[in-house]
Amino acid sequence: MFIDASAIAAVLLREPGYESLVDALIAANEPLRISPCVRFEATLAIANSEKRARDPATKAAAIRKAAEAVEIFVHSIRAVEIDVTAEIGGQAIEASAQFGKSVGHRAALNFGDCLAYACAHARGESLLFVGNDFPHTDIAPAVRAS
Image (cartoon, rainbow, N blue to C red; front, side):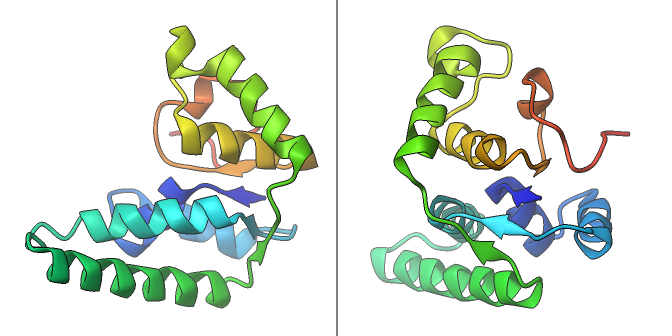
């Protein structure tokens, strides 16, 4: 199972429905994977949720604190960080051409979404995510929306 940044952020920020994501992680009968891009995107999403961080020093501290939280989370679930290879890069380009925001597709995948899609697709894995974008693609969701 490949884990998208949206799932990591939802769990760490305890967004509504995060429990189903935790259940999916616990029940997974397959390796859990992330990429450096996911780690980065999740870190920024969590840091940007800190609304009090207005000055550069406070924002920098929020990023470092979020990075530590993501690192602890990734370690606690024993996720393996995979390399973003040339093959995955090519599949991300194809994902953008098929499902991207720039082509007007209903999924409207952005840069990070296309990379997460490609990482999961390249390995034939399901994708753990939050949101209404990936259901409009052909990727297998790790958790079905209720």
